[in-house]
Amino acid sequence: MTLLILDLIGILVGIIFFGKSFGARSLFAALSFAAFFRLYELFPPVMPSFAQLPWIAALFGGVLLGLGEGILLKNKIASGFDSSIALVVERKFRVPVSLWYLVTDSLVLLASLSYLPIMRLFYTFITVLVSNSTIALLGLKLLPMRARNSNAFVFLVSPLQELCMAWSQRIPTLYWRKNQSMESLLWTIEPLTENLP
Amino acid sequence: MFTGKRSKRVFFTLLGAAISSFGIYNVHAQSNLAEGGSVGLALLAYQ
Image 1 (cartoon, rainbow over the protein chains, first blue to last red):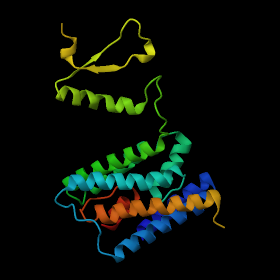
Image 2 (image 1 turned 60 degrees about the vertical axis):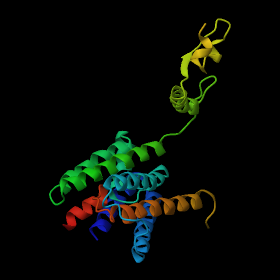
Image 3 (image 1 turned 120 degrees about the vertical axis):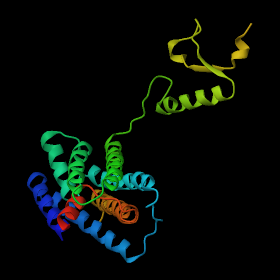
Image 4 (image 1 turned 90 degrees about the horizontal axis):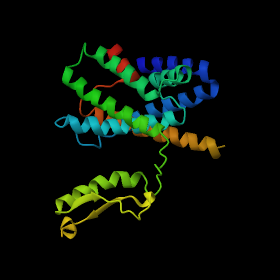
């Protein structure tokens, strides 16, 4: 009930800044969130309990929350009090939503310290970090990093290749032969023994 | 009624709500993790 009142306040603030259509969208989102929650509550939990492995729960939950919230925020829909305020702050003060989330979530967790043990809050803080970085990732436009002959994939993979080669007794070397152009300057991997006189 | 941009938005709203409430109910609540944001604030007021 408190959540409903908070959400309504948030959505009202959002309507002031973004107009009625934002209000309709967010109300729909808040209601569908509550409906899905009720739906899940009807059934026993599908996932095994990670109570013994709070690290996994924190990481997995963080990715799920970040994904869900990120999809909503990317479409400029708020599902509750916090996201509505975060969107308003982003519009007014140009603060990224994920950064604002980090601040508000930390404040809420600090306040929750009054009734919860500190270790539970520590794992929740990890969730907050993970979910906010997921939101930030979704907010980015993931353009491929196009250098001349390479892309982001090569940048990600080449250190792995190096490791594999070092593992199999090969040593990666950076070659630049005189007749080679700058564009074909690449990490060339050759066995060390072939270069020995 | 549900065509183009609007239906896309409805779809994404439902998807986002489904994923995040799944996370809260099936992962967080089962593992006794606390919540941040407005859910955490509501829990704080409830205590």
